[in-house]
Picture: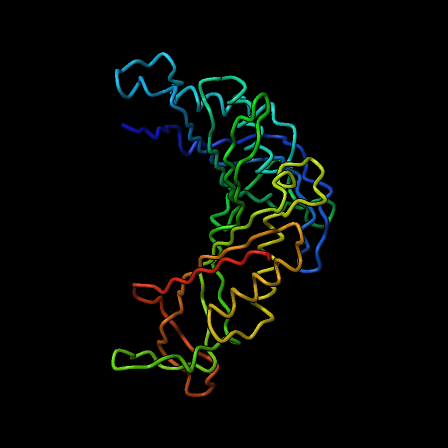
Length: 306
């Protein structure tokens, strides 16, 4: 009988105060993002550990090698204090190193992190407004995400695979999109639209040619998720698309051109195009819409360098 074993802890929410500021990013013309203070570094962490050293817990109820998942939670929270760099990916790699160094029965692990976004409150100071350094507001907005699969290599610890991302974007373009000349048959009721508002839910994922650039304290080759978000928004603003497929292909091409250290980019998009309700009799540009009824169209794309 063959076994494949894993277990772990999900949704360990960490609120780390006074992290290292994110500095030294390479700026891009599509984004004003140049770094952040990291006064509040908040992330949901998931840990999944692998290894046949845990087999006896399954077959015989022998728990001597089992690291309790509550221990994993405490381990993440304790080690968050010791993290001395500024990125989500760096934090995940640091945790993975610490886990494998501390628990030899773990042969490898997959560690994930999803940013919990907060924004500094704007407060008055000397006749203008500045960002507060003590008060922050939680955003229910798009956020960074990353996954690292970390393995032992003799006495070293290496990243076997990785994926970074920006998820949860919800973007509406009022005009400048179309969907026409598609295949029609007896099942087709959708009208052609030469110009339409386009509302999409969008997740963007990418991989580095060299995974070391995702965790290097030198951020000159780091791909900031905020810059990716800003670039895809610029493309959506500028590009007159003939479909969502057309749009995300343009986004992917622009991302690969902008970030030569990016080897792969992929998208999951959902069509949330509003249903038309009413049009003004005085000005046809003035319209009202309502949310669409499910189900929703889903479009995926992956682009990889040659």
